[in-house]
Amino acid sequence: MENPPKEILQAFEFSEKFEITRIPTGHINLTFKITGTDKSYILQRVNKNIFTKPNRIANNIKLAADHLNKHHPDYLFLHSIKTKEGEEMEYDAEGFPWRLFPYINDTFTMDSVETPEQAFSAAQEFGRLNRYLNTCDVTQFKSTLERFHDLSWRYEQFENALKNASTEKIEKAQNSIEQASRFAYLVDEYKTLIASGDLIPRVMHNDTKINNILFDKNTNKAVCAIDLDTLMPGYFIYDIGDMIRTFVSPVSEEEKDLSKIIIRKNILNAVVDGYLSQMDDVLTAKEKTLIPFGGMMMTYIMGLRFLADFLNGDVYYHTTYAGQNLVRANNQLWLLNLLSKALH
Ligand code: GN1
Ligand code: MG
Image 1 (cartoon, helix red, strand yellow):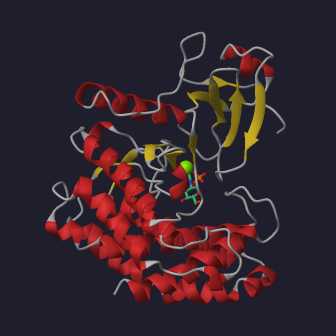
Image 2: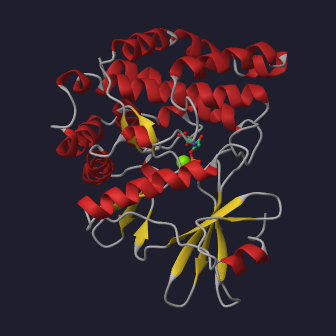
Image 3: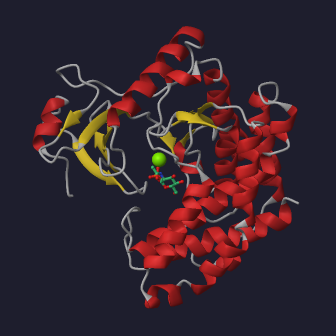
């Protein structure tokens, strides 16, 4: 898609004098920046094929916004801007919902962390969101994607993909398939953990990758968390785990050259310290022992999901070249291999 449809721009009262550019990050939704003379905006098309209940996203965000407004009025929480009719989202002719956010000037996102200070600051920011939302009634929040980080279900999906894949694809993915099977013990550990009741359901962000933090261009500090589509009930291991997954390596999940993937221990420590600077007294002692498991399971789940999508013919994640999901799977499963050594 070149540009957002006219009727969407009209619904949000945009006139001709705005410049529209596509922001290519994100594997699911379509994102545009709308640049005006003094104010700019982010306009996003929600992928209705994946988020089949977009109203749940809006409801969860509303619950969180009300809670934060009441108890932490200074917290910067990115609300969507309503249409001229007062709606949170506007549906286009094909039935895709669109929503608008303010663009925060002098901020930037990064696909990999450069310094421990950045890692600490970003983890602290996600930790702050977890802490502030910990006093919400989690039962009011609904899942926007069922069983999103359920490792046993994701493993089943991988097994089904493997059953139905062509011999050619299986051959290409041989190495990743072997790695994925080698770490299947994590699925059993996950099941045991969930059954133990040691993890407390809390409102989580559920997509805490590094490029979902806005940084201040001048101070290099985290400004706020973005991408709240999966703000919903979860366990803290999902959030700390996805931070470990995306912060510790100097290269992103898109990197093809596996020799560039390393575990930066100083960054790992900074992630944990930054997160615990907010969450130390919220989490139970038992939960805190599960931080390494979180890093492993979230890296594993992404490896499995990318691999399953490659085997299924790239039906879920947006790709720009053939074999991209296999690159991502190889990358994540190699990272898991390194993490499994570093975290024990
Ligand atoms: C997807 O679209 P994006 O980049 O926000 C995915 C996350 C994965 C991530 C991997 C709804 O997030 O779970 O961690 O890709 N979101 C969904 O980069 O599946
Ligand atoms: Mg997301």
